[in-house]
Image (cartoon, rainbow over all chains, first blue to last red):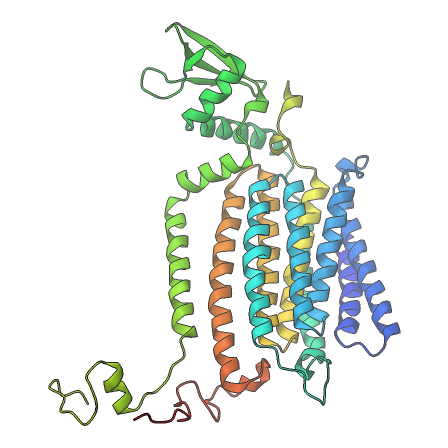
Length: 322
Length: 130
């Protein structure tokens, strides 16, 4: 039953988007925006209702839903606004509201990396190129946007393609999932986080000192910390006091490593080759951008000789350059 | 004692995950629509960034659902690829703009070299010295 409702919601939102892509008047524009918002809100309601487990605590979802609405609405403005600079600015809004959603999904490091890299670097590059390549307003158009920015190309088929994509993805999202995994997933995740902390001796020592100021070392006999994870998700580690006596310290779950530590740990321990490859990709992109941006000029033979430091064309060239 | 678990280790509320997944699908679809319907080359590349955003949101939501950091690490790689793509794509756009003085993608629909292609010589406007 739910898939058909979802397809109907998608269709309503698609019609709204289609009308927004070729607006006839202000009335059409506002009506289309209303239709699109209604379709989107319907989709969100369906998504929240599919899982009836959390019927009571929809209130904490308020901020999340707000960010989702802002994100989608400004994404619509990105693809419908006739001024390219405003498109880029609306995309910054998409990025920032996306980062807010990341924070609510407890992915803090990625959220701030997104704001810094996307909104701070990539979008500024886009704005830079947009302003570099902006056509100067001539007397015909004045301050109007140029024609290829005002008139969409094949909006009907584009919206249909988008409808198909969202419908297929939505059907996949709404397909029933197994809900038995949560307990085992939580245990495995906490175990992995504790072992991550065990691989960071400095942080572990600091956490142990927070519990017991007399702790001098957290290393076991083989140089690695000895750690036992208790059923209540706390961890008990063997430590050495400053006077050399061994003892035990129990770390509460609040001593688990935070998100940046875990992401960094996963980055260098589980994906080291990908990290190196990312560096190579960035280097290649930099070289490629330099090669692309270089202005290619064909020099005459004489100029080429001069630039090569071989003197004037009238002099005989010993190397016999062509 | 379990109550003091950090939020990342408590099970996610299912509506949150499904809304995030839905928003990511919608962002991807909007990026696709924009890429197909806009005619400004820079905006077309901006729409691919929109699709990147959708994919990244799905990654983070899945990472939250599975309480695993691999999805977040993948978002970092998405950021890398997006940065590389932006540098190369904008370089290409600037190059194309220099040739035709327009950002319209329709100006390049014939895939041929235009009246002044990339490799054509510059007009000899520099006066010979000496």
